[in-house]
Length: 97
Image (tube, rainbow, N blue to C red; front, top):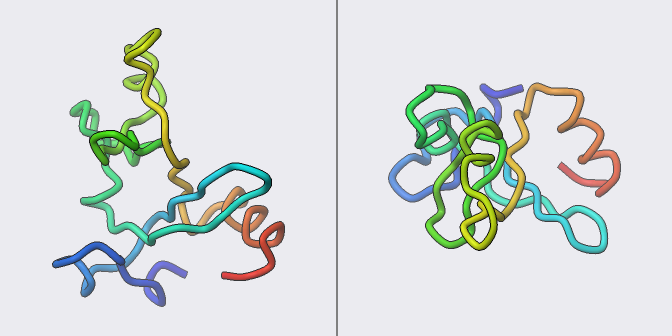
């Protein structure tokens, strides 16, 4: 699936997408497709993140995001791998790819 989708971020449009942002409110809203570079945790672990900090637009894996308690809590859209069951569940819920 990743070879059919490309990154939506400026300057990375020629790179394959590995993840997609999912915004939660009253249901799910699908957002940008992300390449590996744009989805990799800024904490230095090399993993694809689980959440994008809405304030700084930085991807964080869950263990690194959990290091910021209280007012510094990382919050924003979820990062979902496009080749995952989770992605297929969200797409089925939203009704579009």
